[in-house]
Length: 409
Image (cartoon, rainbow, N blue to C red; front, side, top):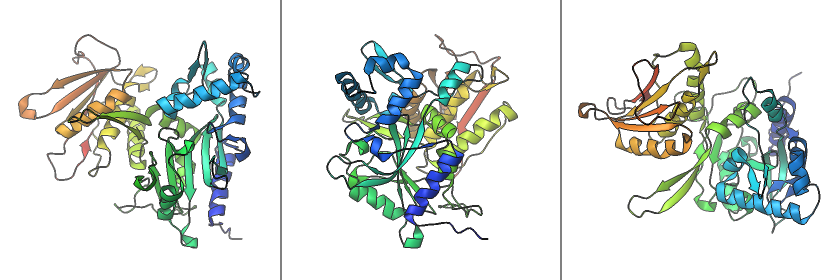
């Protein structure tokens, strides 16, 4: 008997949620547990804190409607507004003498306690989430929460009913008021517009000015996604990207809020970054390949203009620093060389955020190379790293040598 997939909007919701619950160990979120005033899933917050941090649970009495709980919820909301949900998940929230962790990251193989805590993270998915304080009938198609915090929202469409990903984008722009707490800057990590053929993403909803970028695999050296003989073309989103380990890895090593400063006016602005599919794909492939191929292998990665080369290089360098094989560091020093001034400035801005725990050293190479170099070492040193006996990862950007923009790794 041939299985017919329900491709209505409701059917797509059911397909995604069923897959996440049955295959990815998500739990089903109840929209009734959503606290609209603070934009959290209060039931999951209580469950997570009680199991992982019983002393903090008692101190804040999160299971009871008390002034202590109200104070903590206001504190949590204020910290997300100030720092963004990414930083709050990474570092937790301090309220007086008590600190509450809101997420436990990827554990090392040797740390059994960290492994147990990581297993206590609650990844949940809720459908038809009524989010608005003013208009209770407005509802999102889907939202993903970690422990208590919403991190991803979804609007779903399908071509069978003559609605596409563009209709989902327009719904975000037209119907999802950016003044609503859930849609304010930094409150969620990313917003996805999805149909059965394409995915687009936005990290900062600005009503009509919201900017959505493709989040597709690419097909035949072009846009879109390849046909999927085993399902719909966009199922990589829930079968790969938002799987627990994958999403954790993104939150730890890719997603971030960066500060940008206008050189003329001195005015600062903040941007939230989430990796696009091709960026995530290339960095993860290189990280998987490096321990197998070892030091010295060359790679050619093609990027088009505006595809996020600076971010890809920074994410790769950031994770190369900590890469190990058989318990030993694979690279002692990371060198990034670029021959473009624009990329030089972008790399400095991005790596100052992404590589905070490592020591950056900058240098100008000989004039005949017309290049800029940056080095990252595993340990903070007072002078330049010694390269004589150190295995190196060398990344050279060759955009001025050929007509197509691409990094040569």
